[in-house]
Length: 117
Length: 112
Image (tube, chains in turn brown, cyan):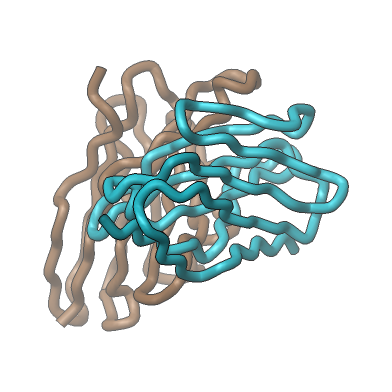
């Protein structure tokens, strides 16, 4: 059973370009979470999605950032008009849909390291 | 607002020592607490998850305890090995929200 997959692993963009980060959850997981780890800082929650629904986007910057998790295909975190301050590691996690102990455990992908020049 | 603190920020020990990593959180109304390991440039590996109703969980040489009322958790690593060198992160899930709030981590170095 493959773990959480993220691609690309490394992404370089120039200021003003768009960045698209992809996340494929573990098989059977329908809940996806995105976290950001800025240099020398801890991981911060950004958004929580279920298939075709954004459940909690309280950690997402109000402008330039968006996320989706379509019925088919991976979850996408999109950053428009990137700035140098967006340089960070972006991690995706997934979990099972139920409410039991096992269901709430989050499993993380390897991350996408975004560098904005 | 939930805040998670980990002490110490860095720790260096000789191989074979038993060690304890500490995590504290400000809001005791948590659903669960998870300990992760992060290797440089890599993702997070889940080590142990403790539900709020539990006191401890064990996996191999690792034992995590939880005292919800005092807002504390400890990760005990027995007979440390150089391969245990990594950053250890503590994260809490609060109430009905599924987001994890992370501490800043303890960077562990086990010297051969």
